[in-house]
Image 1 (cartoon, helix red, strand yellow):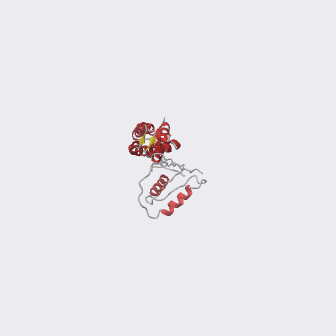
Image 2 (cartoon, rainbow, N blue to C red):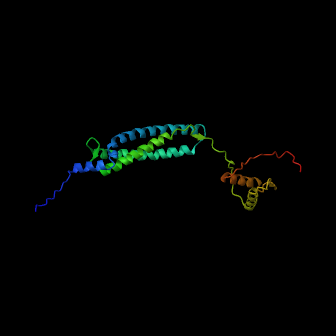
Image 3 (cartoon, rainbow, N blue to C red):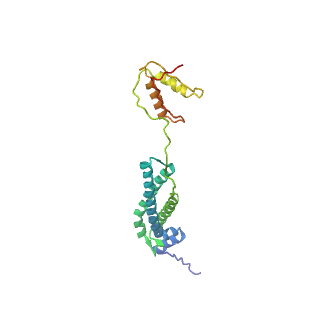
Length: 221
């Protein structure tokens, strides 16, 4: 009866690493350098687009007294985050590029290179998408007019109950006119100032208009 021989075949380390690349997600390694260069180019373009948009926003806010649109503010915030993330990846890239071998289609550390290649590819697409969404015909609009202009009001004594009564009446839809009367110096104007400032500090659909009637004009009942 013949003897049985067992033969163990082993691949050298380079062949093993190349096999891992071939059977895994090798495209992230093969495209790493190209995607990295593309990311650098796209980030530079995103920075220019952000700078141009910020210039338009500053002109609208400082010279035209407009308020930047929420969608513009959101875009600028997302662009800032993307730029910071991409710059950080670019700083880390040299050590990953050094790991490439065989014309850039393999890596001495394939798992690390694949992971980094995925990050580069994902960030590249995010930057491209952000640039496509950065075309704004308008960057700002006129801010809504305040319902009231804040008026100087000093602390008063004894007006709180009257203020609460008047403010309570103002919240009722069936109340159309409220009259405040009294001798000079009792606090009528101070009370109105407090009511005005209450409108200024709250959100509602009303607008306060002040009209001054001459004291010399006779008013008949």
